[in-house]
Image 1 (tube, helix red, strand yellow):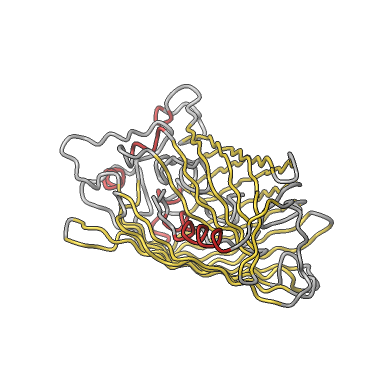
Image 2: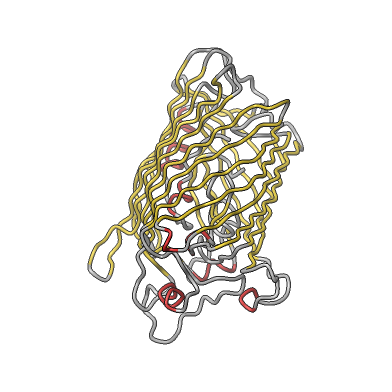
Length: 427
């Protein structure tokens, strides 16, 4: 349950990024000795020390324009605390693009969180997070697994977009029960202020009653559930499993908005070592919502942490975030991962590797499973690709992934790829 600063999750959509991570890889590789070493290098949890890591973020695409910012992480080790005494992440990112009224900030993303896993003799773990983001071209294609990406004639360039604004304060509390079983409790306050573009798909759905809660709202969420965790490492697991399941409830204020809904879900991940350096990582995720759910929560899910579903960097990579939305979301991920080379430079330890990935899933708009909005047949969406890893010290992992999906054409017809720069492995 490490608190990771996920850049693509913050930007809420695939980003095409040219990160200084790659420049640092070249620099480090040219000034240090790289040697293939076993992935089971000793991990030092006793030496009292700090491990900082950070990179500039440079990127963009034809939709969000030029993106720039910084991502950083700071970990404190010592006293035998596993995986660390505490870890803190910070992300600051902006993107600029020429819009209808000239140059504008397309996206703003700011996040801070800290993970403190060893309170009360290691029985309690706290993970508060503070987040603000604004995306003036957040995607919305309507509800259902068969939602169309073809705009009507004479539609504006923002027909499938809206201005998404959100501030969030979240706290996760994890309490050791017995053995690998933990209790997880989550509390969250969120302020949503979505702005609808005239003539857009969302404006049409609001007018016909197909979308509610599209107004300034305070959202209060409580969540509770259980965790089963036998991973050998939270940072880069190679064996064991992780699963969680729970329920959540959300109340919107003012009550006149009619936003009241609940959810339930679970995740199951398994890590199978194939050799000293390679691991097969598998995951299945289910999320179910019921009640009066606002549209900006129909393409996200998760009992304890909010992730894109089923598009975006944390579910089916390559499918744009917001491309599909519904009450029911199910997806699966498979990755072949490896850390192949280790290096020491200026007193720091680095590891380099990569992954092959395949994701698939779908949504349902309701519980009849026969809605016309969901189409017919299996209807699975999918993405496949490759990635690269940089592990800095014991607690910082950065990755760059490229995934193809047929659905990526709905956002970038000339470049049907999702390209992500993030902190941490996906699961």
